[in-house]
Length: 75
Ligand SMILES: [Zn+2]
Image (cartoon, rainbow, N blue to C red; front, side, top):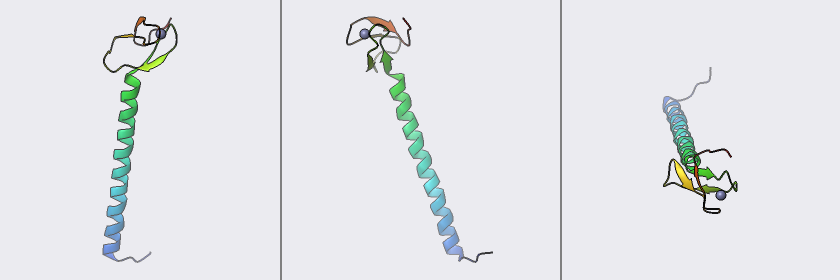
């Protein structure tokens, strides 16, 4: 078995723990941002224009052709 000092072992253990924690927080934030983006992404079924509308949840007006449509409505 490899002999290493106890303080070095503790240092490596803590470093690995902190790295895993940072990576976890980083990926969690990234996923959250992606979810917010996808929740507010609308695609118009008439002109297929994609846009962000964070104010409306059910019905939105397309900024290009000005038609009202529901979320994920298929033409
Ligand atoms: Zn449109």
